[in-house]
Image (cartoon, rainbow, N blue to C red; front, side, top):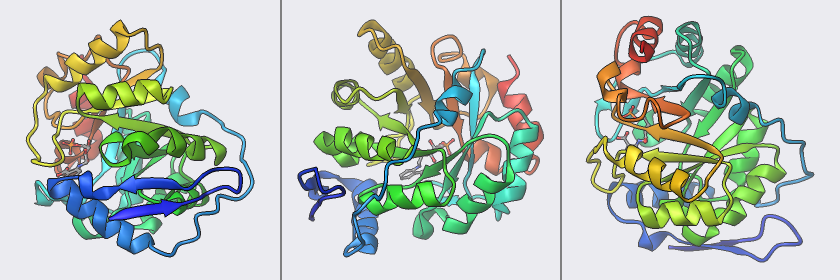
Length: 271
Ligand SMILES: O=C(O)c1ccccc1NCC(=O)[C@H](O)[C@H](O)COP(=O)(O)O
C-alpha cells in the first residue's frame, strides 16, 4: 500500500511505502492506514511546543515511562486495566511519563484512554500508536497528549516530515529505531528524542543487547538528545545494561500484568 498525503499547504505530499513493512508490524500498519484512508490530513494552526515530555525525561536518574497496555500481539490479554487508575498508580510509583496505547485491535487501546490519562495525571502522556497519517498526530494533540510515537521502521524517509508535523502541533515525538540503519535515519532527521526498541516488531523477538548497542552508537555520533530504552524489562537486573547509558526506559507488559502497578514500578526502578 502506498499512501500520499499533504498535511500543510506548503509541503509536498508525504509518501509512505507500507508494503516494505514486514511481519506482524506490516499487518498492523496496513490496518491503521485503512482506518485513516480518507481522513483530512490538514494539521491546522501551529501550536507552541511545551517540551513537557522531553523535560520529564531529562530529570536526574533513569526516568520511567510506564505503559498502559491491556493486550498485545506477543502476550494476548495482559490485564483489564482502567487507563486512568493505572496511570495514577504508575505516577504514584514514580513514573515520569505515561505511554497510552490507542490501537484498538491488538492492544485494546482507545482514544478515551488517552483523553482520560492526559487529563487525569500530572505527568505527560505519550500517544502510542502506529502513526501512518497526519490526522493521527492532530488527534494526539486534540486528545491532550504531550508526545507521539513515530516509528522509523514504518515511516522510513518520511520520518523527518512526520517529526516536523508533530512539532508543528506542539508535540514532542519519540522517534523509535531498532537497528543501525534506522538510527542513522533518526539522527539525520534531527530527532531530539530517540527510542531504541529491544523488540523486533516483525518477529516479536526481544534482545536486551539492542538498546545498549544503539545508545552507545548514538552517543559516539555526538547525539546530545534524550535516549530511551524500550521493551522487555521485567527486573532491576534487566536494566543494568542501560542504567548508566539511557535517559529513560519504556516498560509495559511486566508492570501492566503485575497486579500492583505502583509497587511494580517502584521495585523495577530501585537501583
Ligand atoms: O508488544 C508487542 O507485542 C508489540 C507487537 C507489535 C508491535 C508493537 C508491539 N509493542 C510495542 C512496544 O514496543 C511496547 O509496547 C513497549 O515498548 C513496551 O514493551 P514491553 O515492556 O515489553 O511490554
